[in-house]
Amino acid sequence: MGETPLSRERILDAAEDVLRSYGPGKANVVDVAQALGVSHGSVYRHFASKAALRDAVLRSWLQRISVPLQTIADACSTPPTLRLRQWLVALRDAKRARLADDPALFATYSVLAGEAREVIDEHVAQLRAQLAQIIAAGTASGDFHRADPGATAAALFDATLRFHHPAMARHWSGRDENTAFETLVGLLLHGLQAETRDG
Amino acid sequence: MGETPLSRERILDAAEDVLRSYGPGKANVVDVAQALGVSHGSVYRHFASKAALRDAVLRSWLQRISVPLQTIADACSTPPTLRLRQWLVALRDAKRARLADDPALFATYSVLAGEAREVIDEHVAQLRAQLAQIIAAGTASGDFHRADPGATAAALFDATLRFHHPAMARHWSGRDENTAFETLVGLLLHGLQAETRDG
DNA sequence: GAAATGACAAAAATCAAAAAATGTCATTTA
DNA sequence: TAAATGACATTTTTTGATTTTTGTCATTTC
Image 1 (cartoon, rainbow over the protein chains, first blue to last red):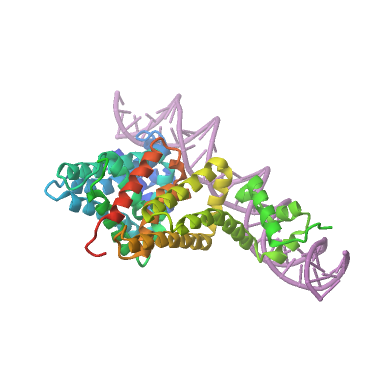
Image 2: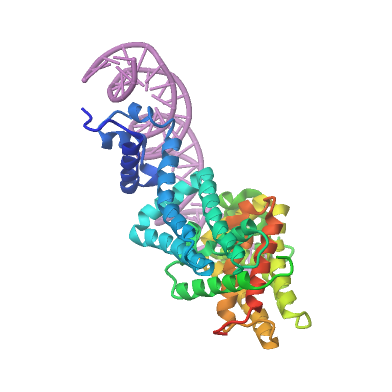
């Protein structure tokens, strides 16, 4: 009956569609199987549990955010200060665009994120590593003056939480949002460029 | 029957006790009235609704955080840089202490906060005003070089969300918590002290 | 007569029975 | 013989009847 053989990929796509139209509370694996025209037993042949499927869908969504950011982090020809700014803007914009594009789906993924702590921790670690990479480049070039790129990356990620953490999405449509972001990023970049006793 | 006449104060105290022992989901105004030995109708004589009582209890809890911070903000004899650091440390410590002291009550108040957006907005505005006051002092003394104390205050408050927002409480017992805080505060203070084109 | 009461209607929470979803696996299909 | 099925036991969610809680106010109390 199946035209294309059933694969993880196809299941993931169907699961995302089901999630989009039913929401995180109502979507279930029978629906996903139905969307694919197979029995739900077949889905369990590719994913050990509903939680595993949910994690895979979330991971795929997060990849679509982190992969383009890696490209920015890798752009060695861009000066570190500019590169850092571009990266922070890109992260902010990626989140805002997803919220603006489909608020319900954004809310759905926020719920999934709340249920899949490990997947999120992994994603955050990836993003921090990208930041650390840029900061290390800036330290090497003499643009930044900080001892520990890892700790500094964590500080920058935390400092900008307000602009990328889904729990703060409520604020993203505020009037002074852009000014607030620019003020904070300006402050942080000045901090990085300042000479330190200990760095 | 009543020894002391029923007052807002006494109701507030009883409500906090009830909240402490029943939690935010189970506490109700009949319980509060019972704890005071009065009918629930009498409570409604002092508070228009359960929501109004809840707001008042939350406001009182928040005051106990913001009033001591105001004292720090007002300490003109302390140099602005140190004063700012003290204020940020005090806010962080106040939240951490409440979480450590009674995690269940902290969770209860976090739920209340989620239900009483307006009260929280007011509280945040107060805290930001305190920060703005310190920053304005630092700008006047030449320690800081930022154009807009209000915007800078907002940026500092947002940048440190990770260390004072209840939604982030999960992280507060982490191993590198103190280092992370010090790294971020150091970065921010350097940023404030740096010369700017536009300030 | 100001403060408190408790009976009451309306709204919300609870609970247990019924329905649906998850996860397994012996059997079927191609 | 690898992939898919669907019947099944178990767990979770939904549903709707019942109980609790909220909020009001005419009456009572001190």
